[in-house]
Amino acid sequence: MGSSGLPFEDTTDFENADRGFVGALVPAVVEAADGRVVYDNDAYAFLDGDCPDTAHPSLWRQARLCARQGLYEVTEGIYQVRGLDLSNMTLVEGERGVVVIDPLISAETAAAALALYREHRGDRPVTGLLYTHSHGDHFGGARGVLPRGTEEGVPVLAPAGFLEHAVSENVYAGNAMTRRAVFMYGDRLPKAPDGQIGAGLGMTTSTGTITLVPPTVDITRTGQEETVDGVRMVFQLTPGTEAPAEMNFLFPDHRALCLAENATHNMHNILTLRGAVVRDARIWARYLDEAIDFFGADYDVAFASHHWPTWGRENVVGFLTTQRDLYAYLHDQTLRLLNSGLTGPEIAEELRLPPALENSWHARGYYGSLSHNVKAVYQRYLGWFDGNPAHLWEHPPVEQAKRYVDVAGGPEQAMATARAYADAGDLRFAATLLNHVVFAAPGDEGAKEALAGIYDRLGHGAENGTWRNFYLTAAMELRHGENPAVLDAANPEVATALTTDMLLDSVAVRIDGPRAWHEDLAIDLVVTDERRRHRLTLHNGALTHRGVPAGQAPRSPAGLTLTLTRPQLLGVLAGKGLDGVTTDGDPALLARLFSYVTEPDKSFAVVTP
Image (cartoon, rainbow, N blue to C red; front, side, top):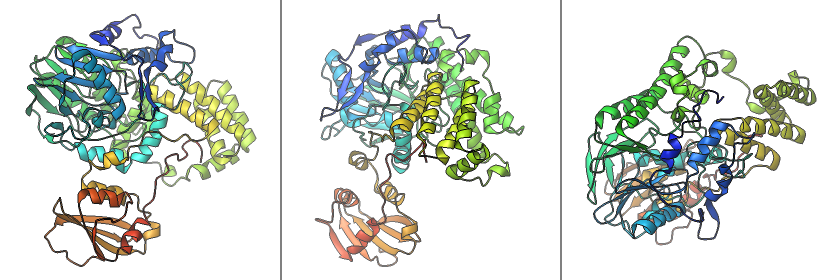
């Protein structure tokens, strides 16, 4: 994580980050309807100062770049709002209005970004909406730019598979990911030189209302062309890169290339620390290579869903080439070493990037890191098990910790040993040993404080923004207890965008299987406005469902049949009862089914047992 050899004298990124500035939001504070602050970019004013001892100089530099805020002109007719959320919102002017690309995380920040654009460019209506990929920071603010009642006739474009992958990440496993995102983005940490100074990819996540307007136009192939409000676009599908569903695209009339989140000004994640499907670094590199040739010489500027643009075709080709080589090298060298018998942690210690990559600002590990990306590549190919049978059936963390501490001579001796390692500069093993003490003796406040102190030091020395936030949030929770996420990825607004199959899947993953082992029931849902019948079966603790045309007779009778509309179904699943719903059979079966549905713990312990 050192910074020696980096070209701090090179100010190109600062010049590009400031280029095209039109105007800022003053104050740069976005509030919800109830007055709650959901984003505050002014909190980062301290970054104007010199880098303190509590921050890595390279991460401080990146934070200063990401904290720049306002409306920027990318090229004639294309504008970006940056610094009002983790991601950027891009606006392309059409014949009648404006096409919005990636409406941030929250409806509130997206509305503020659109208002800032309109303040400087006029009150243009939103005539198109485009999602570059399936991550929440690129669709969550949709209702901020397309409020209910305004979406009629407005095309919503997304890569094929967008909705399926958005749901699998943000709904099925959403609670665990959202809880871990508290650590990754550090949104609950104080914004200060010794606290949260960014996340590498942007500053932090907004905490407003997540929404989703479902796509109406799928991009299914590379080379597909679409025109929205007179704006021509040519697409390159890039599935399995930074997201399972993602795409790059060219605006030929503007000579501008959107790179989504496939090429940003940092090393990205092969596996994000909040959790996700492991990405394919091999195919990522191939799609970047394809982009160099596919879009030819038809652009003069490239921009992405994070960070600042790159101007000049040759500069863009150089940028894409370095990014391509970064992911290809990371992938191929990890495979070379794992095929020589090294495990993920061993490869992470041995592998080093070539100097040309290591000293390139946009290949630095501010968001992803070489260390955890190598382990992700290993996981993609070989899974969690490293082949050593000693690791095949280890004790879970608490039981393992008790035994480690016993071997170390008890809690006091383990703490003394950890302090000795810390004094010798080995913070990594000090953290490991103290973590065992905390898990073996969770009531030991001295052990918690000692571990928090180690996490402070590790965080302050980290070049990677998400590592820093993880360490410092862990220290905060050790001292003050669990701090649940404010962001809610499972709110009713998102539910309205899901298909019925997705809604039923989201119920299935919340069934308390052991309590339902001996249950056997079947419920039919006849959704009249979809003309579909869905058979729900709870058997052996598993809730399964199957959809058929409404007129198709079921193979066997259900204990309860509900005939209802889609809005009524949403109400039933939200626990609002059966008002207006036609029932045939025993309504008590629905209550029995719901009695097995659990509510996830939004503040489950992470750094304590």
